[in-house]
Amino acid sequence: MPNPGQELASLDFESMIGGPLVAVVNAQAQAAISTVNFIKEVGFQKPVGDQDPTAASVNNPIYVTFKYPKEVAAYQPAVGKGDGSINVTLGAGGTGYTVSTTPALTIDPAPAGGVNAAGTATVDASGVVTGVTITNAGKGYTSAPSVTLPAAVGGTAATFSVTADTAQVPAQIQEMKLEVPILTMVPVPFIRVEQATIDFNAKINSVEYRKTDTNIKVDAALEAKAGWLWGSAKLKVSASFQKSTTEGMNVERTFSMAIHVRAVQDEMPAGLDRILGILEDSIRGQPSKAPVPVTV
Image 1 (cartoon, rainbow, N blue to C red):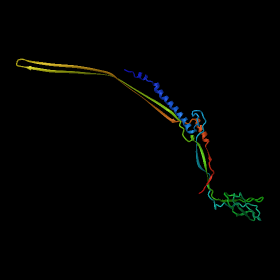
Image 2 (image 1 turned 30 degrees about the vertical axis):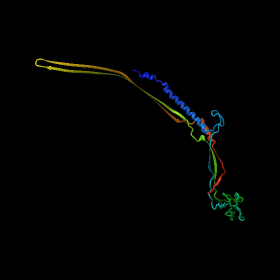
Image 3 (image 1 turned 135 degrees about the horizontal axis):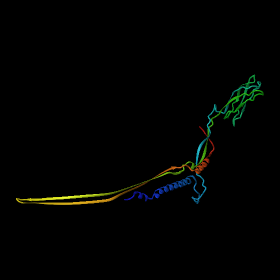
Image 4 (image 1 turned 90 degrees about the vertical axis):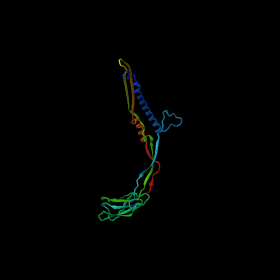
């Protein structure tokens, strides 16, 4: 009768367990090589001429260029009449002004390419400014200028509120060009075998059997004759005996092995993470054309 323990001891467990582990290590190495090839093929320009692709070389990264419109100046709606004139109202009247004179307002700065505004102030008997007269509202102002009236010695200056009736200013749109390293836009594969499980099952069934068959057969026949004074009888009997014995042994062997491998996307190595950081810092948007106004 076979010994199941001896049969299991004769199995080559070193190959059964070591073989899958070696395959996992080789798969991990192939994954690393695939990552290197991906970075070379996707992220960097190909070698020029007859340069050996396996030799150490300095290749430029591949950039993806985008063009997009960017608003560099916002739209400004028209204010008031929109002719570039100004409106001046008196705030505080101040003190110490000379009644006999009609002081002129100081309006600064003058509009570029336009007409500067002009005006005078009205002073009462106590030396206080009581009103303002705009003799020329000006033209071409895009923002309110500063309106002042110098105070007399020992007095206080009057204050004024100024608004400009400016025309609408269209938004300024400029075409920008952006160059982005392609390696910062695509996921880089980093496959790592996280877990490998080897399940081995062995089932050995050994059965001995002995079977005996016995067969007994008996046949009998009787003959009889009779007369007046005599008679006779005849009896025939036959018997047979058969016995057969069968012996043997059945052995069933079942072996199964299952390998479970769990692979995950690994974290980016520190070196490549730093390289991608440098490439991200190189992303710059620069104008490709002069700004153009957008009309409504």
